[in-house]
Length: 122
Image (cartoon, rainbow, N blue to C red; front, side, top):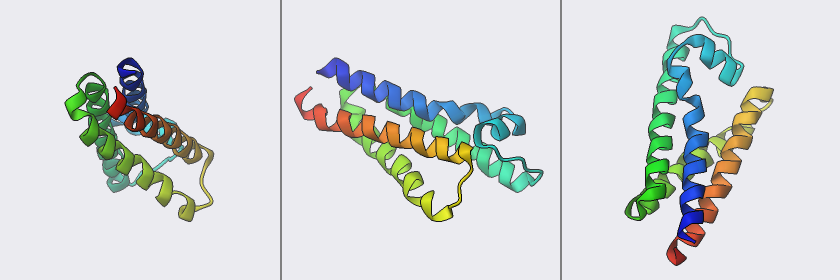
């Protein structure tokens, strides 16, 4: 069971690591989110988002191998992804790219919920 929990945390972490390429350039942000912007302020915010998601992804992956971090990492991941899923629908209509992000967060949420439910038995 511990191996399953590890895999679930690692996959959820990998999902959160995907946006980290947005740190590199505005072009990566555009490909990730389908947002073309010349607004430097928006680009700074989105690149900062990429850094934070990278940190969260790395933390979730580390927690997969360190049981003492799993509760804190799991809660951080659940709050991060659930907040996006909750905030996204009122912003409708969403682009296809943002809907993909929402679906990815829902998948990662499901993985973390499963991992957290199994954790006491791991």
